[in-house]
Image (cartoon, rainbow, N blue to C red; front, side):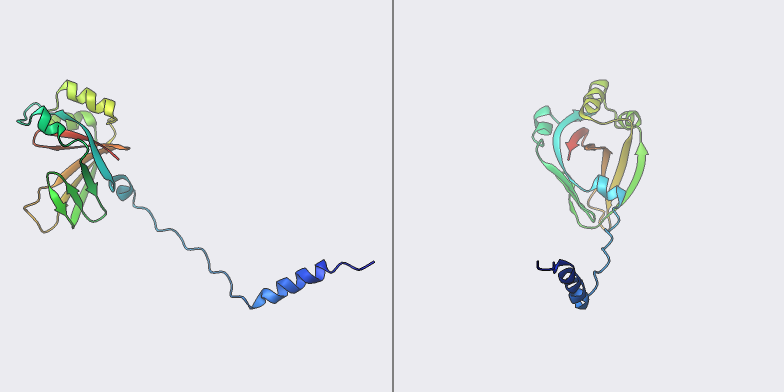
Length: 160
């Protein structure tokens, strides 16, 4: 009977690989900024609600459905503001009822926005274009995957 050579072959394989460089430690993933994770997306306009005082027509507001508000780590682009490549941001927690009151959104608009997914746990981001006074700030209110931004008396409901 032939003796088994498997233990010797395994030992030779382990010893023979000793010339290989050691494995490098795994790289740690970059920490994710929670603000950026929530904010940075291409938001699509899916619907709108009117504030009490607006001069925009239903067809004009509806014409923007399907357009996007793109927010990147350093800047933003919107149909109303154009592009800003260097934006600063401020963040604060808000209640939807307070925001709707400030924007003068009537009860029917509030109900539609709530049904869309805006809750009382909103996060408001105010993005200002650094070094440019010609581009107005963009304010966006976010609740999970739903958001709202307003311009000209119309609040556009966004989804990522």
